[in-house]
Amino acid sequence: MERHLSILNVEQPRLTRPDKTDPARGNAVLNEIRRQLLGSPFAAIKHLRCDFHAGVAILRGRVPTFYTRQIAQTLVKNIDGVVELDDRVTVDGACGPTKSS
Image 1 (tube, one colour):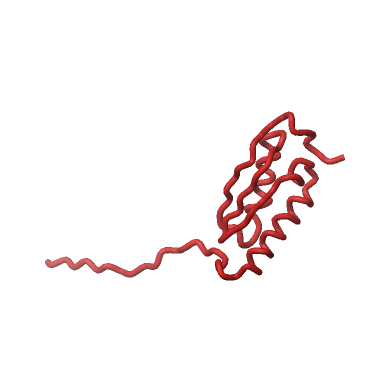
Image 2 (cartoon, one colour):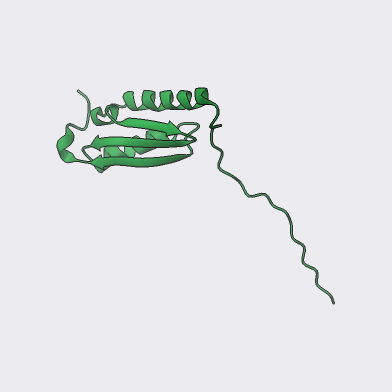
C-alpha cells in the first residue's frame, strides 16, 4: 500500500490594520479613543495621552492604581480599528484620585 501526502494551501488568518495611506481612518480611530478616555469616570484616565498609527494605539501617562490602568487598556482595546495596544502607562499612587468628583 502506497501512501501519498497532499499539502493543502490553507491561508492563515491575518491581523488587519487600517490602510496606512488612509489618514482619515486613523484620525477617526484616534478620535474614538480620545472620546472613550474622556468619557471615563476615572479622572486619571481622562488625562492619558494616546497616539495611533497603522492599527497600533500607544497609550501614555500615569494612573493611581493597576485597576485604572486595566480599565484604560480595556477601553482602548475594544475600539474597532485597534489591532494592538502599546501600553506605556505607569502606575503611580501619587498621581491623584481614582474617580472624578
